[in-house]
Length: 158
Image (cartoon, rainbow, N blue to C red; front, side, top):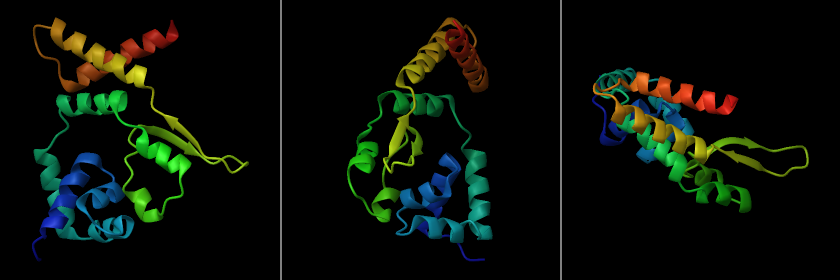
């Protein structure tokens, strides 16, 4: 079994982080991400590397906060580019549409784009911050998320 090249290893790191093969291949620099991810994920060496990287790289509290920050403060420019201009399939692969929750094309042919709620992301960040600051002992990541979700759902009921 041959060793992986630098681009393949980069794919494995991105895949372990985001768990999306097409996005990982695009981020690693493959020209045709969908085809590359299908080919890479069929290789035993790639799967083993992803498993190894995943063991080392568990999701951390900081990464979750970074995701919420990205939702709260991230740019919508690429989503607007998708909505307002004609772009090629290659360009679509490189768009950052992390803030997009849904894309629809209704019967009239228009394109509808829905974004994640920035205010909810800010509320989750604030709740996580409040919980971690008020506690003498550090909360596990899952406990913090659970408490944040409880607070968000309670506010939605009120």
